[in-house]
Image (cartoon, rainbow over all chains, first blue to last red; front, side):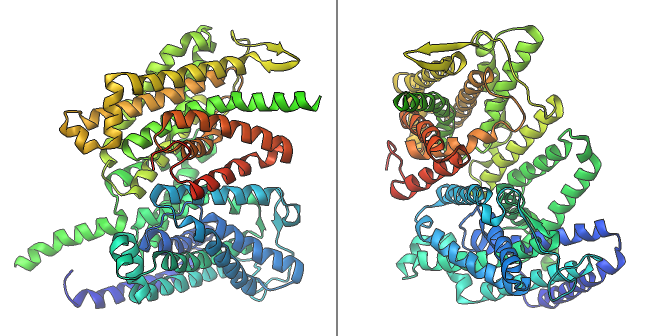
Length: 329
Length: 288
């Protein structure tokens, strides 16, 4: 990397991106397009959250939907039964999710690599079965977020999608800031040490399990916020929508596509993946022929095989190619 | 009376467990030889089912007669998948490996939907239709034939690995591919062989299932998680382990479903999976 100059360029790029993100929904006024933008932000946010554990600490969870679902169910149940605003419910969901994550992580972190990933799938699948058969949380039918007065206090908006967009943007920014802070703190170094040099890290006295637990607690907290947001956006949740393994996979996928262990990777990944999904669904989805699936899968395979470092890695390659002649001249 | 019901339940658990074992044998072999988790394994089974279905409905050939043809096709598919995708990700990070095979899973389902529609299909009146009554217990003939077929196929794989030179070469690659390579065993070819055999095993399971299980593009989803459980329980890479573990999982699933209600089947099996992973990560018969 070249020295300090890219920093100012980076800040300018970020400011521009933020400005575009703020103005975009005012230009794009069709509700379906706004919904599409919201999905991009939402998957970017959960991807950034997933990245803390899966990317930085290198513990590949394929059961993150468990945390997403817990967030969605906690805030919705609190709203239905105690009339607690989803804003507080969201935080409660995050905390419940973190506790659950630590309880699950304690035994599961003894497993490495594939074994850990498969255990996380199992946990999420078990949770889905339990919620599907648990009548007090709506069972297979699911839960409707109660008809409450529209507005910011209840995080319910019927007439416009715009507020949801800005909430999703806000959540994404908060999660990115948290990630950025972690990346620069001792935690970031510890996480990367756990990922790249676990033996060296533990010989230096870093308790691997303790910091893996810290990583999963933070990661699950932010994932749960995404879940609560989803519940408010859709005003309806059921085990099929907030506890399905395909959602876990998508969280990991946006990160891999964008760039594992990089701050903005999931944002780029979500933008690309959500766009591909949306375009293929609109072009071919109605046919029921599976053409959208084929295209989606082909892209996943090509990225996994040829671009294992994702968009961020690819951009770095390009930059390096351009930087070289400059340095010589 | 209750004794009879229990016995009936146990035996039907064993019968489905034998199929699980066969599906898992292919998966465990691929995992054992090259440390890759194949998420698309259920789709090999799905292709085996469709192969039976089309040969039956187009040419009126019974699934049992066309079995050798299906095995050959699946073996070839395994090789093709290895050549086109897997070969390129042998040294890639585990994440890329997971997503390459996961992508294949979606791709195969999409292709099946594209060519053969998402409809449920069944094979009726094959050779193996009918019922068997034995000592007051009722069984479908297809299930019994499937169970016996699964034992034979699993036995054949076991024999191949433990009693032939090529099998020994495969096993050597699984234990230490660099040392095996130095002894003149080409790892690449062994990897390809593992994919061929693995896909063929799942294909046989698909053929055996096809005469009593609905055939549809997502059918693999019913088997992949269970196959993971069987592989973990039996020990990653162990064929005989997968055989016994398959039976155990089949029995646990059916008996557990009988006691707690069928909706909890999957949760029971997955809890068993977690328990085994945590208490004995090397599995019942795996190498530590």
